[in-house]
Image (cartoon, rainbow, N blue to C red):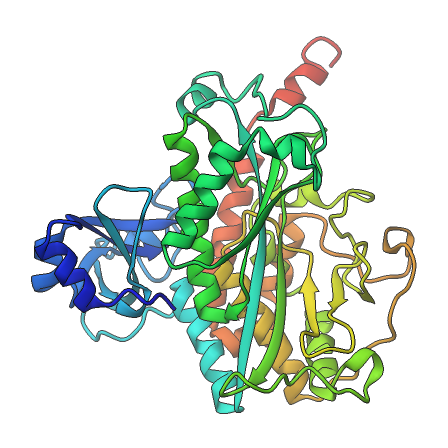
Length: 455
């Protein structure tokens, strides 16, 4: 949690150091939506609550009002939700002059109950299930993206053609190459650190212009909050430097995909005892960890949509690219969808390598927890470890190849319906359907180039 308190904000406002407060909710795509408050008004009144149109949890990437949602529609008049600032998320935003930010929970305008399909509420529900079991989840996301020399406007006006990455060749762990990018990456590290997000490192990734930012392990809700602020902050900082960043899972056919690997473990309620560790267990795995991992694998197809929510997400799953194609587990093996890390130590954890950089962290983490909890409750047996090159494992469990397939498994998931509720699952199935419908009627450059003359 940030250490910036509401009392400190009031003092900063009185002294003129803060003049703007961003009150933000998280939409289905994991983006920050909200209002810029005059700081004096926020500390006098709006810190209690504000309001937003309920269509913000029922629109697509283009902010289109999509039909077919039970929660909101033209017929229902698109009313308001209440935005309730969670003051524990309050923080200064160093890269924006005189600005602080707070995340808000979304409440029903009449009852003030949490909106069940809001991403933060979905995750909080799974956190509460764990708390009732005397457990606490900790996670960390490794977030990858591409950095370009063009601005966002330049990229858009060019039709996103002839984009130039900030570097010209593979820069995985490459110090000299990343030195050329320090103007942006140092600003990102320092900015996030100043916003109360403890940064571990940045590094070059597997393709030209590809970056990774890593922050410290934290309780799962804190990590999800950090994740959405990191993505927004990286874009704002790059924009301020005349650059552009994309978190598209697969921006170019010839480039590696961008992932958001999710490291996860369970601890005691006080956060002091690692429940995944047993010094006498295989690789140091406790029975709790084995049950949790068994749940992840048993329900891997059910929750793939929450790890890969768009058509483009599935272009990343290509053999030999360090993006997994098989939902199996293996010790320290980057070809597997689920990698055992921290063998025989208190830091033992499972890394889900399936998710792309385009995922919504609240939804992805909630789905992983729901599957893991189901494994624990049912004492599921963990299947034998896979060893070797998982890409060549013909009989191994496949990750769904398309959004259409992932949406169908989501629709039929009894586990997620029990964990999230039918209305929540149906809400996100509709989001997946709409994404597929929009794609199905589009004509791509590839189709035209391939068939214009030869068809």
